[in-house]
Amino acid sequence: MRQSDFIRLLLLAAIWGASFLFMRVIAPVLGPIWTAELRVGLAGLALCAWMLFLREPLPALRQWKQYLLLGAASSGFPAVLYSYAALHVPAGYSAIMNATTPLWGALMASLFLGEKLTQRKLAGMFTGVLGVALLVKLGPVTLNTEVLLALLACSLATICYALAGVYTKKLSVSGSPTLLATASQVGAAVMLLPALPFSPVHAAPSVQVVLAMAALALICSALAYLLYFRLISDVGPTRALTVTFLIPLFALIWGAVFLDEHITLSTLAGCAAVVLATWLVAGSPKKAST
Image 1: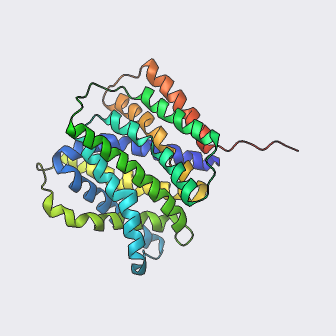
Image 2: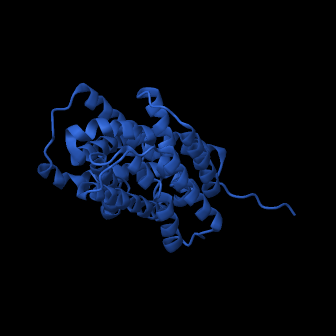
Image 3: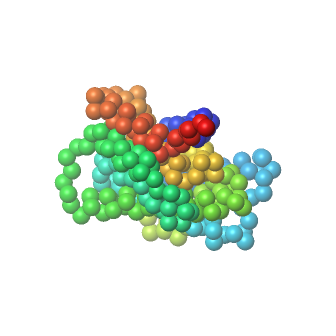
């Protein structure tokens, strides 16, 4: 992985780490469906405007089935599932579940793309999950039906991300990262539209909620997915998905900066494990010189 790819990976992790703060503000007010729909809908509009500015052709209607599938798997369903989980379990639980995405991604890439599932990758993935567990301090949660459904929602979201990564790698031959990012958000918005009439808003949004939604859509979706699809195109889905190891690290940093949360020795140990995991999975060992 090149230095520029690592920079994109870190920037993406920092952006998606902040999304946890925004969702905690928005989801209790708008509900999971409206939170997800506004997020991907506004991001889709912004990306369409960006493509017009660049004078790139917009997603072709003849490929609408591909774009709906891509949008549902990469953005629509995960956005709804994590918004739902945020209502019933602490963010730490979702972060740990989210960190299992590279495991699913490696398995899917091995099954559908022929990528070799090496011992190095497996060791890095399990190290990353351990690091996230150290990073996030879990509070006591009563195991009930709502909690079980929330954890199941997180698991389904990680599988969606893994499938989307593999599907994107197949599509990237005929589509630029900008085109795929735009198509994913527009496709997700279209997929979620039929559910809106059955999902009433919980309360009137405040200025804080509106600003949080703007940041969630424009930064954590539009900009983030431009970075994400570029990474998939350049380094493949397995390495791109290692961003999920770094997201909780940045979520803790934002929490310390904006919510005055303390960083303990266990979080420092977790950071070390996460960095090691990212290097094991994303870094390619140098070949011995001959």
